[in-house]
Image (cartoon, rainbow, N blue to C red; front, side, top):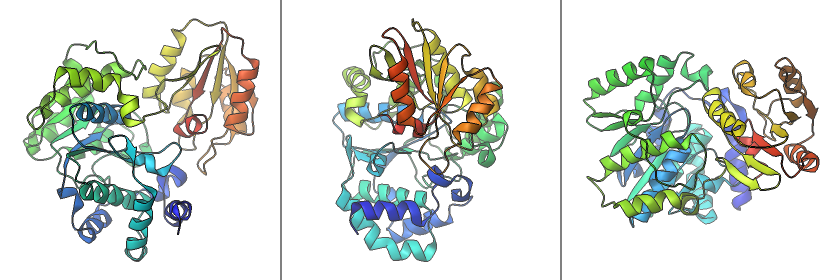
Length: 404
């Protein structure tokens, strides 16, 4: 198989949450442990940092990786989902895994995958760990896919664990109270391994403290630290808290790595350059001012839409699409009524019908037309907008993926 056929096989053969949702979620680490044994435990052959949380995982992971790169280390970075190319998920010093490595890995292990009916995510985690081990990275930053306790990445013993925040997302898997969701995320807290909590409320703080006590894990609450004034290539308001989380993590990592203040400054400044992270308050155009952002739940959208409102503009245009497991009653009230909406369906099987979205949005006073695709919607918004207008594109990672 060539690269295109290999990735198509990965996507189609087996459940993939990104495409299918619920059917891809496995409440068990048996397969991952089986795969690890088959690959001769690659996760034990490199140092790692484990990052969980409802929002900010990708930004936080990328900033940590960028700072470590600036300090001169060979840094693996595993994130999900990808926007354009499957290989975005697995990088070393910002460079994507080669197509040949992906092809060879699948071909060599295909029989084992089929025999044990491994999920897309289990195979991808195995690929990342195998790659980082073979390429002998100094350290790898590993982002949790969903939850934590039962996530395929949760077979590593990291130098530190990081939990960015807790909000309502994927409630059908993780629970529908903040403490239930916190319990799942807290599953990455390991015995005697320090854990950094980015943001907390009393309800989640108790859960984290309880689990840290059981595991005898030193716990640090970054939210309580003073705000830091380092410039950063990531411009979203929500990065203020993520930066505090990153700095607390870096402070703890100084026992294992030599990291200077200059490395930290350059790491923040060059994070997009060093890691290729896209879609976080990403400015696409100046006149009209166009921004896309991957925020897709109430916790993330609240901050992003507040930042939109802070801008000076004449008219606001919003290109909006969502996937079918989103709680529209919790996100639609956050959107401004005084805006022109362009409703579209992201081009993934989980994409939510734009006609139904339009009808639902109308209940909240959000009015606009429907378009055949995200690109059509964006083109129409660009065509309609005057130079001093603002266009916001979002609602889903997969909406942004079609634009960037």
